Image 1 (cartoon, rainbow, N blue to C red):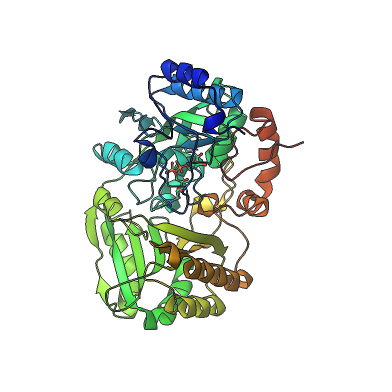
Image 2: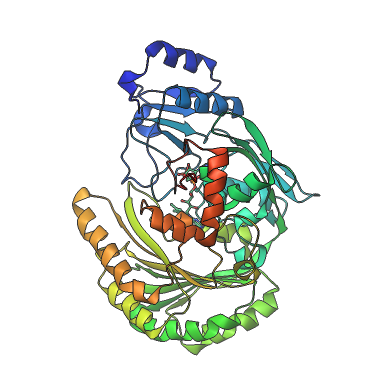
Length: 454
Ligand SMILES: Cc1cc2nc3c(=O)[nH]c(=O)nc-3n(C[C@H](O)[C@H](O)[C@H](O)COP(=O)(O)OP(=O)(O)OC[C@H]3O[C@@H](n4cnc5c(N)ncnc54)[C@H](O)[C@@H]3O)c2cc1C
């Protein structure tokens, strides 16, 4: 692998001249900002950052990387928990400036370049009272999110974001442009939807849109001392949840006391939603009930469980429970009450509905009914790292006897092959064969890596 110092200045200058976008080297005053990713724990120093302006820049960057044997990281929104939008000593193919988008409201399709972030796509789609199922952190890149799966409050009803991709344009490891859809390069299309980072650089993504305008949504908050009672209620109630309902449970800080926070989003008929939510809203008086009808876009902008501002580093471990057993509830309340900081906790999303059950035909490997969870901790100062990290590891280890071993690939950090296999389950072997076909030299390996089949 090459470093910046080893790259021939002439070839680098020629490469820069061939680009419509920008090339940023370590001496550039923009370098410090350009190498940063969301998770500040990844303080890495690439040799070259290319801010691509179009797909030709992407092709040239992939070719330059191969020619110079450069480790290659691909970045859209830079929100990978594992820091996969940057690398040490190699090249970052940064797509964040590629922001063209086109919407066809009649055909209910939207096409975007990979620099579009979730908040931007929500605004474009909501102008027509439609939506692609997206998460609620506005700054996450639509490309990285959807190519790994893409979980949304609309998922129980309309599927994961990857299930809504109808066409892709992909720059492959050998610099070729391929279209991928049900009818063109169908095997690549299958692989890109769930394991996309491994198979090429998506330079255009087309999504199906769904009509959505207002939702009944908000939070129910309970003091942590009532968490056991509430979680037991949820466990009994969960099997009855209709597809229109999305439910997240999180232990979050609140001035004075930690709270069990239930986020609910009902996307169906409002009156029916009031009826469905009544048992939960009335069985025990919450500390706060902010559920009301609001614009879907307002709900999307309301935010996620991540601290909003500041140079946070984070550590997390993800998993899955089929059921919220008494044992799991006991561990959750015990560890949540002893967390190292206010921004440490556990979040659980309840998955139900047709998209969890049917064997939908793409690479996404986490179609599970039950509770996806992630234990997470954030810190600002290096001195806080160890206690945050250790708490996450202890909590995660304690949860393993209650867990199925399944994990959502976008929840992973750099946890090794066994965990990547767990994320893809029985789809891994087919993915390894397709990796051999489309990226036999494993050019795209700064990701949750699928090893090409021998
Ligand atoms: C605050 C926060 C909130 C989140 N909320 C949700 C949520 O609600 N639902 C959910 O499902 N996930 C959520 N995530 C996880 C998120 O989906 C993943 O971290 C996702 O990979 C981020 O995509 P990105 O483009 O921003 O990241 P990047 O770091 O740019 O990329 C992530 C991965 O995708 C690859 N990649 C990026 N662009 C392309 C491309 N165009 N072609 C090929 N490969 C590419 C990268 O190489 C890397 O391996 C959240 C993450 C954060 C930090």
